[in-house]
Image (cartoon, rainbow, N blue to C red; front, side, top):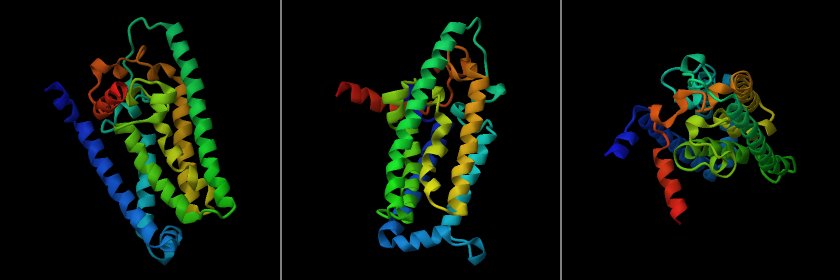
Length: 250
């Protein structure tokens, strides 16, 4: 009964709804991609003065979401809100050595993730430079990453399981790297819409990293009670935990 209630939290419902919306967006863009790549590229690159396209609306959704991440509020998960001072609930008599060890290991693992991600996307960048793939392919890749962002949060995250080894998304050191990662392919497309997404994502990433550097205690469950499982109200890890248990059994 408790597991059933966990998946019914307001935050979990919100994430499942958002996940469904991302699936619909992905399938819609993928259908256009399969039908006519040139049409997808034209919809994305068309100047606003020539008319607003569905891709412009998608760009606006992306931008609004990133701006929202710069100003966390009560409607967002603790995974994001932990960077804000009001969400910090200090643990009594925290161990400074334990926090230092946490920061050391998490930093190393975070930059391993960054290196892996940049190398992986560098492959697509090279293919694009040599015209082996086109703008439409990078657009489709971005929308695919947009969907994968929620797959990592709700179902399975290879970065968490294989590299970061964090307990859950609420405790994730790189949780707000998501937009930077999903918009990395946009760096290769010379266009206002693509570059505005990528560089805004860089601002979100820098905001996260600067806060982490100044206040690492907000990111560690050993110094922040808000990140401890007993105090978690989000329960967005419910499905992921079941998936991981099944993987361990297999």
